[in-house]
Length: 399
Image (tube, rainbow, N blue to C red; front, side, top):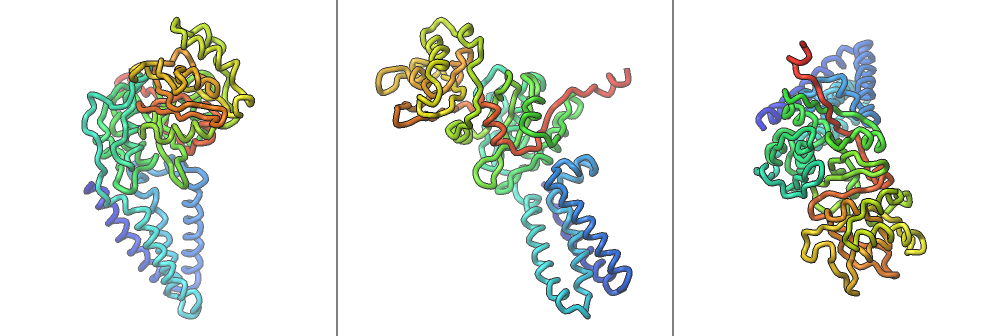
């Protein structure tokens, strides 16, 4: 916390210093003014390229520097530019623009740098019993604050079979510099993960790729941290694992909130039921009904809703025989609109009762895990993604 406060104070003072440097260069006139303004415009343009390539400066600047200047690094340059304009006594119009530009620069710095002096949000300290569900390749660490999705997702990724380094959400909040009302970013998440994984033989990296590339990088042992769209002008962080061939396992630290929204929207490009689904169906009659019903009863004649994978949790009261209002098991009703993979049927809960007048059901995922189609993932993916890979330890590299 103290380090980030010092960075905030230092950047504020340095920006003010650059303002006076600009005034000094502006008073020199002639070539000094032209050269300074051209340099400022070039640097500001270069910094703005981050919007097109978020990982650009990740490959140029040290990560422990970039984590504190990723949102404010252009402010000192802008202040230098303002200082030059402020000295142009002969150009009254230019001087009149200096004050509004100065106010704009201050507001921009506060908006993008205020996180450095904000407190840490509340996070769960325990790491022994993740509240989220256990899957075949990991568990979910739920976020305890609205702003801590990045920290919770990072802690979730640490439970992957290929990493297996449990850490509490509270500890990851501090490592990823997650702050109240401001959250965190992919750069800060990478910064925290690299500190935590140092010496473990696992390295974290950042790459700006599309949804298909992110899904292809994820495996069943080493996941990918993927930013996704969540509401208007908001982003959320989830963990994805590889899954055959056009599906992605999503571990969402925000319980069922986002997954319900994604599934209800649908896409029109969902995958067919796997060919081996019927072979994998277990002995209980519900499994076989699901395997047959999805192929037979999906499509436009069933209300035009595109099927997606849903799952059923046997730990709920009634198990996977949870009955609907008509006395039929809800999962049997659900397959009229949705696919379900029998192999995973016992992992999730279906709630709702699809009828001819209602062409969708709600899918409640209290344990935060869901399988979505690649079409849905392409629609919600925001990028860039954080991936993990094996890195030889120093003594292994020497050998």
